[in-house]
Length: 113
Length: 113
Image (cartoon, rainbow over all chains, first blue to last red; front, top):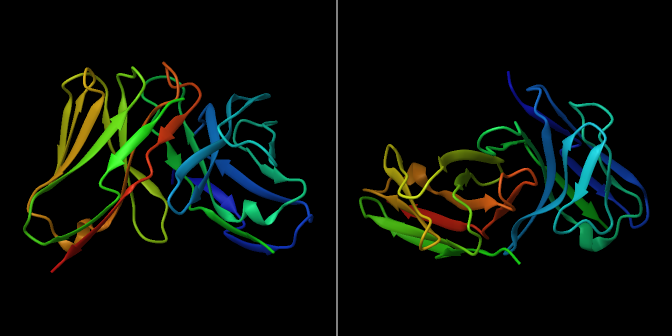
């Protein structure tokens, strides 16, 4: 089944404790991205990648890092999480050619205390 | 700064009624996307509109695009409870879509029996 898999789905952590949210897709998509969803703000792009070793900032990159060492994986790293990073995170992927129709993962709900 | 504005942000309507959700955007993009999100779930693609005048229909939902007015509409005909969800419109951040989508804040639609 074609899908985007995120882990963990739920996480409660404390300020300053480094964490990684993994994202993997099995559709051979070139493009991958991370969004955060907050009430009243919709979805905002954090980082995106157009291919292996190519990453770039989205609209809200502060406090996050990403890497794209393999085509299928695009982990999101929070080096020192803070409470304002409490949010629902979505990983998404798509082909680069044609329309940019994103396939989304199930979401990861992160709470930073 | 690219802006995508949806109206209304919240809509409560009765089954059997018709209504329209509006999506205004500030870019010159020829492409517009509609997504649906059920409560506690991820986003799924509904429609991709690829050119001025494009119209797509599926069941009781019909989407259209007017690139000159920078406006897309999502029309609901004879609403049923199963259409209750949050609907997002989105446009390419830049021409070609290589750097992802910018989303509106979403329209939370509740359809009551």
